[in-house]
Amino acid sequence: MSKVLEKKTPGQNSIWDVLRKATTKNSEWPDKDEFLDVIYWARQIIGLVAGLLWGLLPLKGLFGLGLFLVLNAVILYAYFTNFQQIDEEEFGGAWELTKEGFVTSLAGFLVMWIIVYSGMHFD
Image (cartoon, rainbow, N blue to C red):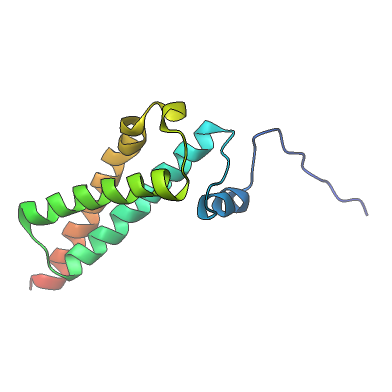
């Protein structure tokens, strides 16, 4: 029997390789799109988890929305400046990294928050 081995093209890493790099301090990111994908998906996870927590707590109104906006931005900013210690200018500056995937994260957060809050606190 022969096994077929898939050859990776340069810059094509498995999800496990990317996850390992994302959770390892000061990883090198030669593929800029790969790091932007990590930021994007981390932001989506933050949005869904925060929506679940906000619905369970129950947080309401502008306070809950403002708290999410601040926490979302601060967590990711701390991740790429303190944990990964990347050069922000290589990725278009801190603002580009801070807004990567922000709108879709906000949408996921709002949907999760509304569904959980409505399910838990309305008859």
